[in-house]
Length: 351
Image (cartoon, rainbow, N blue to C red; front, side):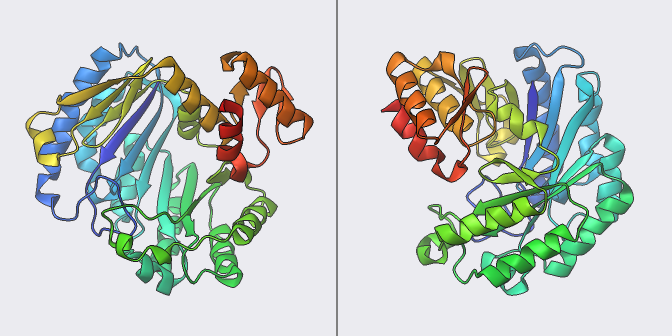
């Protein structure tokens, strides 16, 4: 069982961001955290959560570091009996809002992993992306977190941006690996409708040769790629739980929950969520759609595909790919060694 908690507040809206996040709703923070507590009570019953059964907790957003550690206390108090000993508890954070006080407060609550939204160590690129911090802020935030004693530290980088060069990305990697991280996420810039970048789609400029070089360079630093966007000496248990299709509670406005064959969607309207956090839509998933998701998730990660979910024709096509050395097969599972081809391979198997 996993738990995801969505914090929709941000101190700035990045030009590429399509997540349910807002820069103008800070006065609602306290009421929102109270609403989260109400939904949590409800979900613990609906999911029939037993003591010591929540394996991972992930605070995402938005920007969790825009909410004081004090406001998280009631949530963690309620969760305490249900969280497994030694569970991975992650919070996302932005370098400009992850103050010493905030980091210390979150560590005291049990958070043991921080994922920093760095995106680049090039100040011009950060301005282009609409980030609220600079490269110095990012370095200082990581070092603060190390000093405070967090067990695991991660950072995000964005590539495939107009103006990216090998030299720029090499600088980003050099800076990243000079810091005390054991995990790195590298995301290609994608343009979503309704974002500032949607009017200038040319800003997304991914080049396959540069992406392949980037992934190779990360691997050379000893950070194994375990999913198309994730690398590390440490593999996030929360990420792995999603790809293994484990059940997860989705807490907050714009979060998503999953139980057996159902998905749950709390309202994306923050004010409406505060008024009634139990406004939750349910989606019934078909066996076919779940199988498709398992194939796509398995091929874009180290999880692979269990052969028993494939039809006879799909199994033939998967074995053909093994013969062509495009897939690996062991212990009745198929594994994809080339994540950049994952979607194409999935479509071939299914069709």
